[in-house]
Amino acid sequence: MRIAVVVGRQFGTAVRRNRFRRVVREAFRVCQQAWPDGYDIIVRPQQNLVGPLRLQEAARSLARLIPSAVSRLEKRSSRLSSS
Image (cartoon, rainbow, N blue to C red):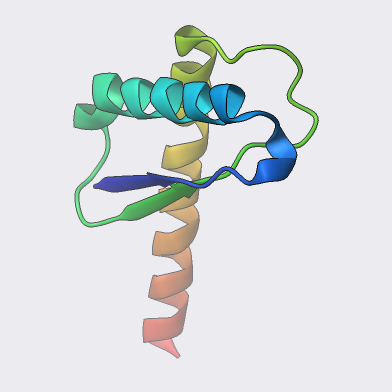
């Protein structure tokens, strides 16, 4: 599994954008073993994110969002292949 972090200029200064990227990549690295291989994940921050993102928050969000995204993709692919 690979991850890409996309952060636009609207998110804030370069310091804020780079910090977001570093925290998300580290959270992914820490939790990576729990997810199946063969997927590419793209992460984009929400505009309403207030304050700096913490590693624990990012890890919790990834732990919640990635498995649900993988299950939705598997359901979609099984539905398409059965048609």
